[in-house]
Image 1 (cartoon, rainbow, N blue to C red):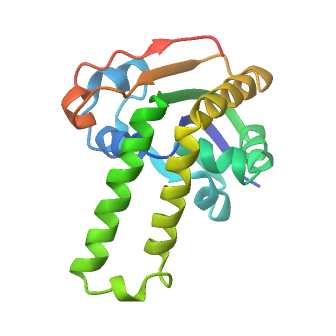
Image 2: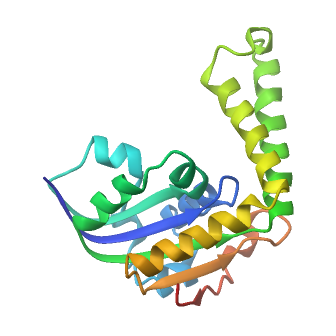
Length: 196
C-alpha cells in the first residue's frame, strides 16, 4: 500500500512533447508553468511513468509527476491502473499537452527517422526486428497512421470525458503546436485552466 500526497498527470498522445516538457520542468527551465502548477522547487518532485511507479511505489510520496501517454492508456486498457493510482492520491492536477493530428503525425515521422538513423550509425540496422528500438519504430509508424485518421481527437475526447468522470477539476491545457523546440517557448508558456 502506498499514498501520494500530490499528483500531476502530464498527459498527451505520443509525440506531444511530454518527455521534453518533463525534462525542462525538472531542470527548472519552465518557471511560469511551475508557478501556475504551484510546484515550488521542481527538483523536489519525483518524475516517473505510471507503469514504473506502480511497479516500484514508495510507501509515502509527497510530490509525483506522472508521464501519461494517452495512446497507451486507451489502447492498452490501462485505466484500471490509473484509477488505482488516483485512489491512493490526496490531490490531483492534470496538465494535458495538445497538438494537432498533423503535428503529431509529423513528429512521429521525425522520431522514427531519428531512431532509424541511430540504428544505422550503430551498425545495428541489419538486425531490424530484434531490438526494443525497432519495435518502437514500428509502433510510431502505426501511431502516425492512426493520427492521420483523426484518432488524436478521439483520444483527447476520451481523456476529457475521463477527467470529468474522475472529478479532476484542476486541469490545465497546453498547446504544443508551435514550430521549433518546446524549450524555446517554455519561458512564456501560459497554460489555461479549463473544465474537463
